[in-house]
Image 1 (cartoon, rainbow, N blue to C red):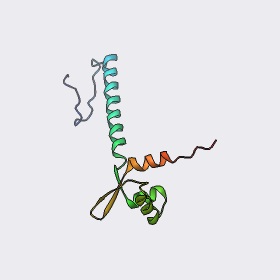
Image 2 (tube, rainbow, N blue to C red; image 1 turned 30 degrees about the horizontal axis):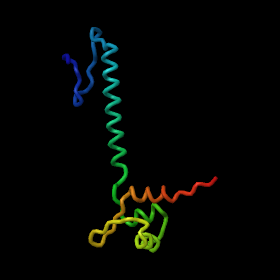
Image 3 (cartoon, rainbow, N blue to C red; image 1 turned 45 degrees about the horizontal axis):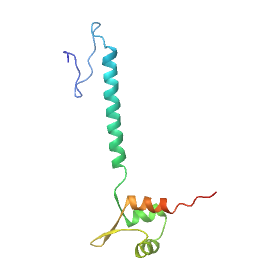
Image 4 (cartoon, rainbow, N blue to C red; image 1 turned 45 degrees about the vertical axis):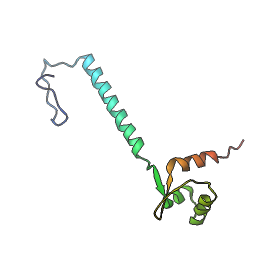
Length: 106
C-alpha cells in the first residue's frame, strides 16, 4: 500500500488529485465489505439465541404453568437436563416440539 493507506485505527486521510481509485480498487473494497458484513451477521445469528433455556424461559416461550411444564417433563414430551437442582432445556428441542405439533388447517 502507498503512503496514504489507511489502517482501521487511523483516521481517513484526504487524497490528492493524483491518487485515483480504480474500478478494481472499488470492487476489492466492495468484496471486503460484503465479506465483513456476512461475518458480522453470521456471528449475530449464532449468538442471538441461547442453546440452553431454564424452566422460566420455556414457560414464557410456551405460555404454560409450572405444573404443565412438569407434566411435559414427566410424560417425556420435553427432554431436559438436570444439573443439581436446576433444569435446562435445549432450545432446539423446544423448537422441534412446536414444529412436530403444528396443526395445519385446510
